[in-house]
Amino acid sequence: MRNMTHVTDNAADSRYELSEEGETAYADYRREDGRLIIDYVFAPPALRGKGSSGRLMQGLVDDARSRNETVVGVCSYAAAWLRRHSA
Image (cartoon, rainbow, N blue to C red; front, side):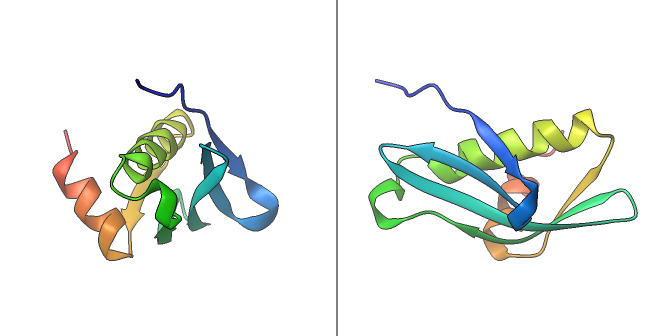
């Protein structure tokens, strides 16, 4: 069974969030010169291995594209995800 996901931009905390199964995965970011820079991606243990971080990344990339921003992965997970999913 697949969950419907909704990624939100929590601008007050400079992070994108995805809530699933009562837990929240998040990606810390900063915005500079038309770039969305992902510094850190975290998924709580209950969400690991279930694709939550990937859905979080897809949601933030979709949002960044709608803002005409380029996404830059600083943390290893974000950088690897972006390499695997580049067009």
